[in-house]
Image 1 (cartoon, helix red, strand yellow):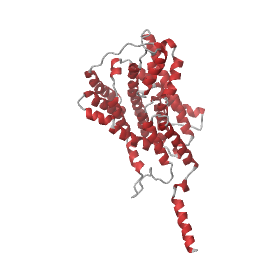
Image 2: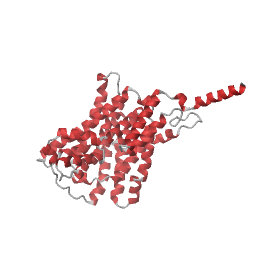
Image 3: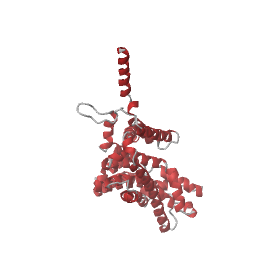
Image 4: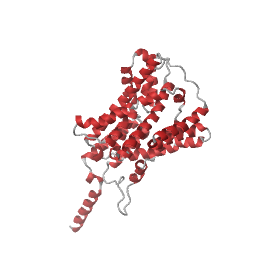
Length: 389
C-alpha cells in the first residue's frame, strides 16, 4: 500500500510538472493561430522568411511552463528567448535588417526619377490615417481604447515595412508587439491580393495602359553620393530616424562603393538571415494568449488593413495627379508601389500594367516609389518617435 501511495504521489507530481496541467483554452487558440500562420508560410509562401519564425515563436511561448520568455529573478537566469528578445527591445535587430536591405537595394530608379519620392511620401498617408483612426476608435467601439504611443505603433503598419513596425512598437508599445508584427507581415504577404482591386478601382483602362519612357542611366558617383547626402539631410532634420535611415544608407554605401563587396555580401546574406531568425522567433514569442486574445487585437488587425489600403489608394491618387500634370506620361499605377513592400508591390504594378498593355514594362519605374517608400516609412517612424518617444 505504501508503494502504491508513493507511486501515486510520484505520478501526481510528474503530471503537475508537465505543460498539460497548465494548458488553457487561450493557449490552445494561440497554438491553432500559430499553426495557421505556419501553413500560410510553408504552403502559400506568404513572407516565409519571417512568418515561419514568428509563428514558431508564437507556438513555443504558448506551450505552458516552457519558461522561454521568463524574466531573470534574483540568481535565477531567464529564458533563452528572453535574452534574444533584448535585440528587439534595445532596438538592435531592426536596424541590422535595414542594413541588409540597403545592401540589396538599387536606388538608381529613384535617382533617375526624383519625382518618385513624392509617390513614396504620398503612400505614407495611410500611416497617419490609421494613427488618427486608432485614437478615434474609442468613440465608435468604447471597449477598444488606444493611447498616443499605441496608435502610432498601429499606424506604422500602413507603411508595409515589418522591421520599421517592430522597431517603433518596441520603443512605444512593446506590449502590442505580437499583434502588430503579425498584422504587418500578414498584410505584406497579401500585397498581391489587397492592392490590385484598389489599383483598378481608382484608375481607368487608358491610364493603366500608359507606357513610360526609359529611365536615364545613373552614374556610379550619383549612387555613391546618394546614401551619404540622404543620411546627412534626414538625420539632421529628424535625429530619431538615425538608426533606421543610417543603417539603410550604410548598407547601400557598402554595395555602391565597389570596394567593400564582401561586407555588402555579408550584410545582405548571412548577417541579415541570422538576425531575421532571431527577430522573427522572439517577436512571435511576445504573442502569448494574454497579450493576443483581447479586443485590442481585433482593432489592430482592422486598422492595419485600413492603413495599408489607404496607403495604396493615396499613392495611386497622387500618381493620377502626376499623370495629369505630365500630360499623360506617368502611369498612375506606379503610385501603388509607394508602400515599402520591396520589391513585391513593384511586381504587382508590373503585373497589373501588363494585363492592360502586354508591351508595358513598369517594374523599374515602380521601383523608384518602392524604395522611396522604404525611406518614407523610416522617416514617418522617426516623426512618431520624436512626438511620443
